[in-house]
Image (cartoon, rainbow, N blue to C red; front, side, top):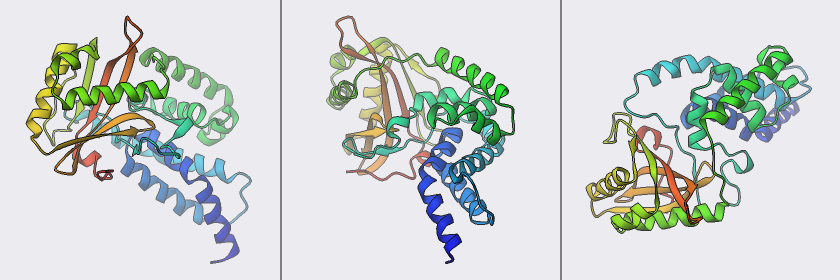
Length: 296
């Protein structure tokens, strides 16, 4: 390996996390993101001249590769059976190097990004998740800086309107998640109901491959009975453990040691100041869990 190729590899490894992060946020798919990481490396390895900003070049390359893929992804989503959720990134609850740490993008936010235009999504991801300047974004997308600012403002407004968020300290969210898990596993309907917001909604992504609700389930009583009924159907081999899902407290459900689903909860503040579950997103489509193994 020549000195130049050594340098190319070192530069790429330095920015690999960012390359994957951009691709994942754009596409919502771990497998597709990993493909784009490889495609970006192939293009980068063929560069012969000096590059003033390797990070900027790699971000520009992967962003445009992702934009090219979004058309086919949109076609697949139109025929998707039931709610679509991104493929989850799962780590241990005590991971010192969280999946995305400060740049975490939740499953809920990734769903909102799906409602943006491809250009809006690209500008939002580069600016809000990775802190690129509008000048850098304009160069990456071959647009004017003024146009990118306008697109970015529109995207932020859309996200704020679609994604109001109650921010609770991570330790409180973890504790509330663990309490909810214990109530569900224990089959305690009254306790589960007490932990749910009255207007709670749950989304189940089975993709038509595995049993899941094809429409969102709403209301505390409906959600509680749906969840407890599902756990009963899974049988005696059910296991559950807390994990981080895209850097946020979540749950892995296993059946006889195999991953059955990955869920993440959102919360609202109850009348007495306690946290109540307001949203549940559960990924059950086995194709979206293929990159996972039981973390136990």
